[in-house]
Length: 89
Image 1 (cartoon, rainbow, N blue to C red):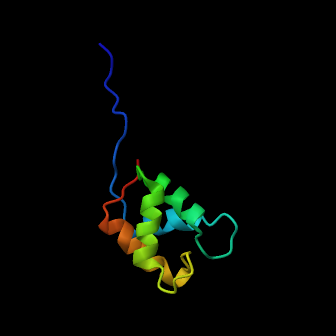
Image 2: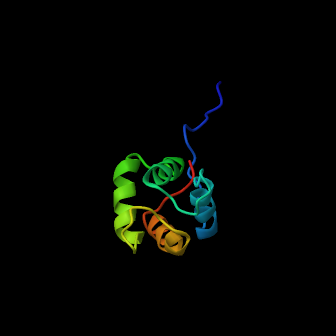
């Protein structure tokens, strides 16, 4: 009899872990998350439509309206992601 293996396992993660996932995506090291970097982070968090999620997250967290997330805006981004129920897949 074959052993059942689920296709994906959802694990709840805390705010600090979400923050680390976002920070890891700052590939150019400028201290800001571009739309592309945000998209990669939301993909890693399991978003089915990361482009849409990026637009919504910028609406909620991009206080200065420059189209990216700075270190100062990261807390708002993390709170938004947690509120949306993101977990690691």
